[in-house]
Length: 399
Ligand code: BGC
Image (cartoon, rainbow, N blue to C red; front, side, top):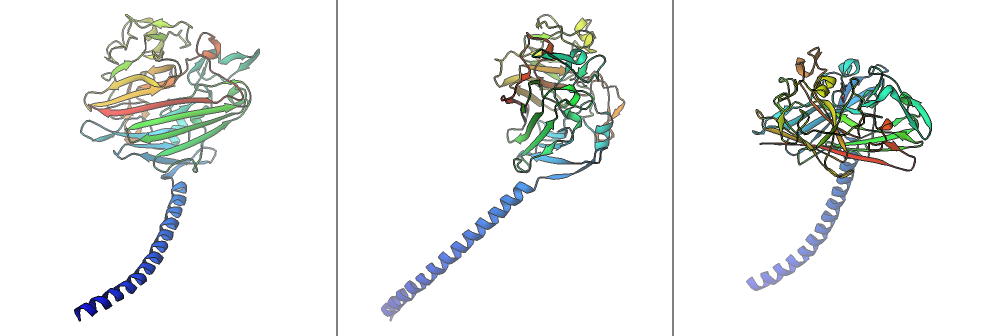
């Protein structure tokens, strides 16, 4: 019995096995198909489901959104396609506690009304062009004048005040935001239709990464940068004078009283501009030094030591109460260190916090100001057929 049972059992089992095998194969194929369908629809959903909320309408009535990028450590950036502005940036301190380290506003209306470029993408030309004029291939161009006698940050309506398109196909929800903008021939006085693309991403190494590309259909000048005002103790928590700053630069570009470079590359040695050893921002900011008087504090371009076009360290900032460290890495040859000198307490920022004098600092990676009029500076001309590429990383850690 036992034997026959075994035999029959085996036979039964065997035939059951076949049935099981068949049904297993059917089930497996079925589930594979389901998984495939599910993953296809998930992918489809992924590419169309950006983490976004409405951020209101511009004065022209265009709706803009606020997009969220984050990483596995809880770091989070919220970015609007109005001006490509980083509205908030949460990064951990030495105990893992998150704080928002960039200045900004709660509403789109405040950005539109009176933002001093908080968190914005700056273009077509970051910083100043003297008297708003330059000559290219024998033709003289006249740009919008919006800063004394000069042109600043792209003019009256620079890239910080336009609505960028979001390429949802190339963006990765929660990870990567692709913004594009077509700056028309003649906009703010610049020649050529310029197609600009900026990719923002938040990496698992606690970096906010910004990748710029641009092409043109006529020779033009371009200098793209990012204008976040940082306070590593948290936006609105006092001034940044105790932040310790290192800039990897032996030289800077001195300016005249209108903040236009004189054309000289001057050694920082023996001056308050020397940040080759980490020094508190406030340690020498009120020294009787003509360059500090011209800038009302620090508002200058440093000539980075790293090889031209190489990607490397520009600056490092340390804030001792939180332990937060920010490193700035870039492919650009220069960095504008601006110590928030024009902040005077009249702006009310996120959460009703008042932004007083020097409550934030900027480290704007760039080609040098007024390069179109300074042939001795690295060139900022972009010709048809060329593609401008530039990468900057703001990397956060704590100690
Ligand atoms: C400029 C400052 C200017 C600030 C905000 C900086 O990049 O160098 O002079 O005040 O941006 O507009």
